[in-house]
Length: 121
Image 1 (cartoon, rainbow, N blue to C red):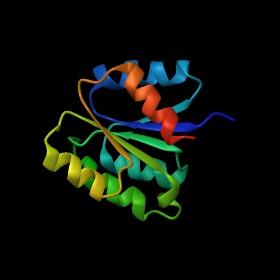
Image 2: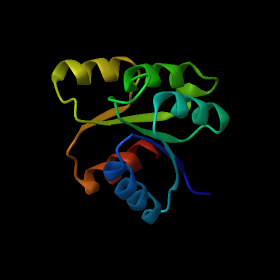
Image 3: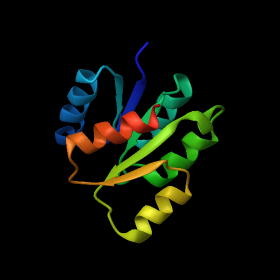
Image 4: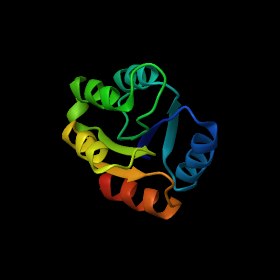
């Protein structure tokens, strides 16, 4: 059974190629375009991995990360931030809120796939 990935980003130019890439690697992929939508999706069907942007409409990625962690079983969901916010302070905040990894945009497809694979093993 393939691992389930939830991509959370409001930019179609990020979502579409990322979804295609992950599906090509054999993952089942769902997409949310806001933090609220992501939390609802994770509560309904917990993903194995969330690829999470920080700058989202409504609640931001930091709060989304916290809310997913607070869900029943949220501790077992892996969270990988994919964001343009690349300052050390942003990375430290994301990791302290429970993210498992942090990648700054622009990113290489190979790096995202490698880190996703590592988090899912």
